[in-house]
Length: 332
Image (cartoon, rainbow, N blue to C red; front, side):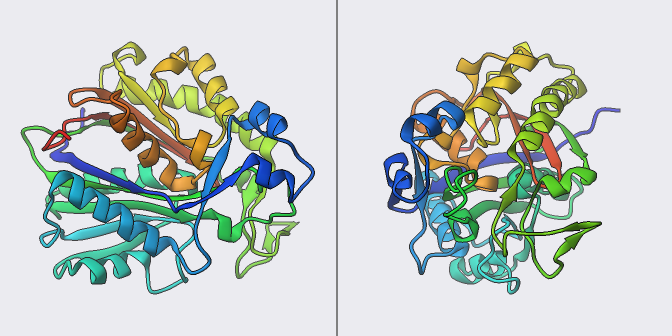
């Protein structure tokens, strides 16, 4: 039976820090080169949070950008969902800091961790909460300060990550819902291929390394994503009775341009109809999809009425794809 959604995405906002870390800058830190980085990742620059700037600070700026660009009222938001793997501290949550800053008096506040798939997962939860009649106005935010958990002596990871935030407003609207279908999956046994150690220093029989910084087996993650995501893309559209030809724009997690090229090749989806943000922002984990989404709007590519396929994937190993109608409440 086809699921009926009553949730509409009505606005979007984004933010990236001012500091730019270029490939040339990285050449001074590790044994690498601009040519090597571009060939393997498609990245030229990434944005880096200031020393005293944290995920909540980036989130506040993204929400403020949403509020100003779309002239949205936030006082009646009744749930805040923040997707992040780099909260300011284990608790209180980033969501609770947003609640306090914007004085959303009647809002519940929850942080959600689905790594680089966090934004897609948070959207899915927001749709479920509204469609179930439990909430009417949900603020979904993805915010990351990946630079603070990156080892800048490890050339395999330090070239990848950047900082940024994105926010969308999801509101109850049975007449113009945005959510057409969803497909989620997990391969938990692959969690050892990309992790950050915490209270536990072991994962099964594996002793963890990295000292709290990101550790990644890029080859294994690439293989998993390149085989899993094309199948997931097909599953998402088929659930809605669509085909990939009906999709106007594909917005995957911006992990690596070569990975996205492989996903597009294997799925048969045109790269020229794919939006990504890693070229000048790096891999911003959960924030990469909203950054690419808003960039597409600003560049005049993504327009109201377009059908969007967003697909997040990352550590866990988890993935989530959503087919969406982009029908905001006020065009820019």
